[in-house]
Amino acid sequence: MFRSIALKLTLAFVLVSLAGIVMMGWLVRSRTENQIQQLNNRNQVASFVNFAEDWYVDNGSWDNFRLSPRGEQGNSNRRFGRDVVLTDEQYTIIFGEIGPNDPGDKLQQSVRQRAQPIEINNETVGYVVSKRDQSNSPTVQALGAAEQIFLNQFRRAVWLGSGVAILVALLVGAFLAGTLSRPLRKLTTATQALADGNLGEQVDIRSNDEIGNLAQAFNKMSNDLALGEQQRKQMTADIAHDLRTPLSVILGYTEALSEGKFEGDAEVYEAMHTEAQHLNRLIDDLRTLSLADAGKLSLQKTNVQASEILHQAHMAWRVGASNRNIELVTHLPNDFEVVVDPGRMGQILSNLVSNSIRYTPAGGTISISALQDGPSAVFNVADTGNGIPADQLPHIFDRFYRVNAARETAQGQSGLGLTIVKSLVEAHGGTISATSEVGAGTTFTIRLA
Ligand code: ADP
Image (spheres, rainbow, N blue to C red):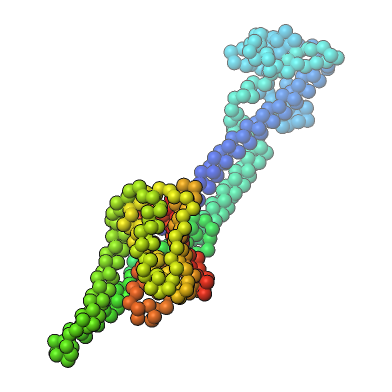
């Protein structure tokens, strides 16, 4: 029935204020009536005491005490006849009756505590007791006309106040409920748009409360989804492109060969083999990446000396570097042991060193080093090569990212090398970072926890 939060909240506000009003009305009413009653009572007793004192002074004793007929006292409002009891100084009742006691009886012990003495010349000549025990709840009927009018006016004021309070509760409730439910409606619309495929949909909610946080999280999620979708499309296009390039070279050769346009020789077969190898490497890389993505990259970890890892990388690339007139050096201040998959670790360093060789001009130096930093093992591959522009540096680990796309594609590089390096390092529970300066060189740092 109540399907809107706004309605529920407004009703809650009204209900809470109603409960408050009822409680307050009941409390104030009972307290006020009680107070008026007590005041009334005290007035009655006080005027009776005055009257009795006058009587005693006039008559010298309580003999023949009676209330003077109305009018004689000049006070037509005096109504104390029914409510008060007069005793002499021995507590013998002279006037009025209380409980089972009539005139002539002794006043009950329990009532004596609240008896008010009548003193003349510092001598107690009697007592006055109000029949109403003040702790008893008085009845409204006992109130005089003036008090009744006051009470009625008071009740009207309470009712009016209650009405105004409910109206205010309704307005404030409706306003607050609207403020709360508006951003929720916006979020619902945006979520529906996202579900309909509108990736990247944003909501404009700037509050700092929980709903604001929810909106921020939604905006981020929506952006990430859009980015992921865009990367997926880009990657499919890149894979298609990278597979097509070597394939079309091979197809070109095979067509020309089958049509007898030229004779096959070692050079032609070598070229075809290189392209097939490139295809093979690309497919291997993609497989490694998809395994890493699925968290299924199995590592054969063993205890290896850091010197062993550096030695292997050095042996693998020593010739390649010297062919290009680049000096390859290793640096190890103190040998230590690491727990890694030696094959994968070799693949990581190989990828980094081969990149360095590719991007370092003749006469340069590439240094592979390892050191212990507290509990971490740190491996560095540093070159004195071209460097990477600062604005491109954050992207080099992205899939298919190439700093100079045209040149690299011509050289047959996939742009997957560093992505794979990063996945392999992360599979080892480590991190990789790069620092670079254009024209001075690049340093890759691997930190294994
Ligand atoms: P690729 O297979 O194209 O080399 P990588 O993922 O290995 O792809 O590298 C991404 C990009 O980072 C490369 O296009 C290259 O421009 C740049 N890069 C990688 N290593 C170095 C380096 N040592 N010096 C300069 N640029 C580098």
